[in-house]
Length: 318
Image (cartoon, rainbow, N blue to C red; front, side, top):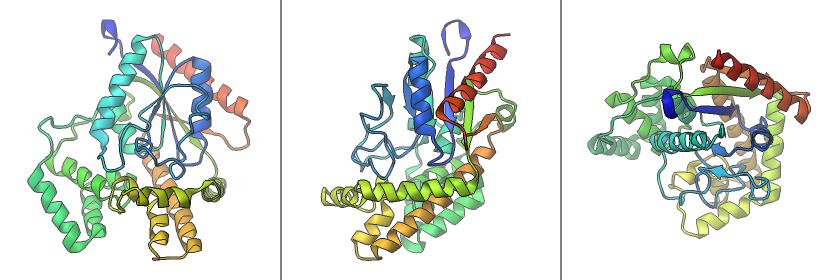
């Protein structure tokens, strides 16, 4: 909250991977004279650049980016950390007279932040977590993911079955009842922040073409070499960051488990499936203002977003 009890303001740009969030967020932040907070759970890791489509320092246009390159590959990261760190940044930037821009595609993180999920301050149940780890060893990650789908289908839709760390965290939340959000309140638009949440969309066939092309460009840019370098530096395949799409497929190829062509095809397929899961997740967030960006110029997209922005905060001021 800002002084006087008013709520902090934030602009959030969401959408599936490869839809065009990064470029638009840069354009918006540039026009607003503000800073960007990453809402992507993979961009926090140092050295994981090409496979995450992380904007390079040059591509950031001198705009300050937060929650990028803040952790080493073996360090854990979860929704509670994001919620805390992003919340502090939003409050500080509002205090400086800036409306921060959050750009990202990790639905659970953004939903928890905007809707004010409350988590138990007592921390994790180590015994429960250890039981889950033993289940993974005995019955595999797919079995554990099946448990999550039964207990919390919404969380499961956002998490890849092989991301054991996040599956365990989500099961902890479901088991111990740490999520205390009123979904009815959130659906009615009563969010923690004065937040305009804009979702970018394109026809599915166009989005899939963009995904396939992005993967080809990643390979041309040195994705295989990046994964090889990370593994050679001591990052194990079991590390949370190495479980991300783009890394586990190439790591499998480098281990001789598949061919390069098969690995790239699998990467494209997994990314398309991930985009589909993202869309399913975001469609449940009723407060998102959707903009179909297909066929529009950058200027047209930017103007459409600022019309939403002006109308939103004018309405809030009444």
